[in-house]
Amino acid sequence: MDKEIKLSPLEREVIQKLLEGDDEAKEILREQFRVATVLDRTVTDTGFYVDFSIPEDIQRLADREKLIIQGIGAKIPSLAFDASFILFVKDGAINLLEGFAYEEPWPNRIDTFELFHEVYNRKPKGLE
Image (tube, rainbow, N blue to C red; front, side):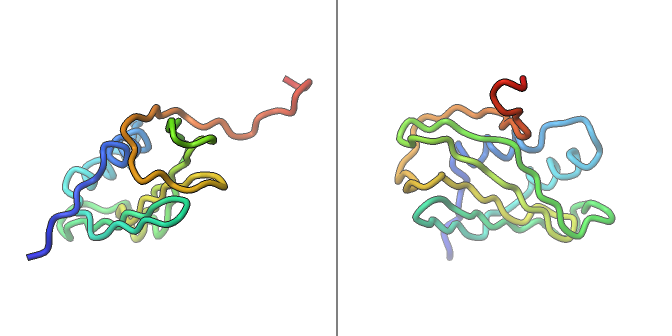
């Protein structure tokens, strides 16, 4: 029998943060996450991928072939730069979580981290 793959505290908290919100789509995705099974975890030099399976009887997002949810980063003491995360939704269901570091190796072990909302579209200095 294969050993069950569990999410790390970082992975679990990142997904919970990415799925915050009052809209119906996020509620459907949160329900999917509650019953999701981790199929596989692949660690690369600069990050990781976690593949999910969602039971067939759980509601999918309507009219959503593909969706990308992002905007959460993490400060991790062993990284010089912040880490970023992307949650991929395919055929209306949670499919894959990607986490990555910028131009540095992904840590072998992460004991502490601090999540934050990433800010895009920053204005250049002097134009604030």
